[in-house]
Amino acid sequence: MSDPASPSASGAAPRRRFVRAWLMLTLALVALMVVIGGATRLTGSGLSITEWKPITGSIPPLGEAAWMSEFDKYRASPQYKLLNEGMSLGEFQFIYWWEWGHRQLGRLIGLVFLGGLILAAATRRVSKREGLVLFGMGLLLAAQGAIGWIMVASGLEPGMTAVAPVKLTLHLGFALIFFSAIVLFLAHLRQFGRDPVTLPKGLRFGAYAVTALSFAQILLGGLVAGSRAGFTFNTWPLMDGGFAPSREALFAVTPWWENFVDNVALVQLNHRIGAYALLAATALYAVRVARSKLCPRARRRAVALLHLMIAQAALGIAALVLVVPLWAGLAHQFGAVVVLGLAVANAGLIAQRAKQPAA
Image (cartoon, rainbow, N blue to C red):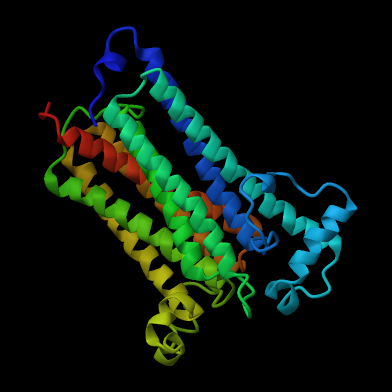
């Protein structure tokens, strides 16, 4: 993406500031959405609203009759019959408000992004090429919302008490792709400045590898959340008395490939191994960038990324051994978003600078 002539011209800085502010607001809302989504999952609230009404669903139940109508719909769901039978109306309202808030935040993100895009395009604050990229991002956001309903619908199938782990992870993955796209666009707008020196190809590859591993690790975390694997094997560094459970425990489900998404033992082991690999890759990258002495800004980012990664690993261990209290689960999920944001911004700045002649 190249800057359009008019927004980059002298006196057009305020026009670009609007785009940056709009995208920063959207970015913050998406980060909050990921955390609220985690809270919805941890509180078991995701299936409390059994219908998808994009417009009228924004109005909560008003009055006792409306609440009883919503409660009756929930009591017809498999989750209520198999897991929450006997729940009081007050308990239902608690989980309902979590899911309602989650959906309202999703609507708000859609309105903020759509409104900002229309205004930016109408006032020519972005180039035609940038507008097309942003429009594509909007389609991605719409797809993410649709996947959210597909995810909820999977938990309303007979015999289900929760959403399918794969669909939950897919929903999370699309949110992270949208989040990453915003970060890259902000890097393009030089929201995070610009590196004065191009890093060698090997170090650029390291930045991309850390970003890819960060994304993959969060998806593995999505499978952990979806299968509730964090509520088992609550010891560290050992797992079931050793580095890993027995082969029989890891592949107890048939067919074998379902173990990677539904078997709590293998799902948690994969998340642990992913964490070790990501931490090692980040440490190696930070050390190599620090030794290169080519770009102080890149060195500071690499060191910050390593510190964040260590803190995130510590939060993950705390959440595990404490059997995932709400505060620890949400802190770990928010930490993952922050780590991914910095990794993507770092990779975006390096890629941007690599296209320019070395200073």
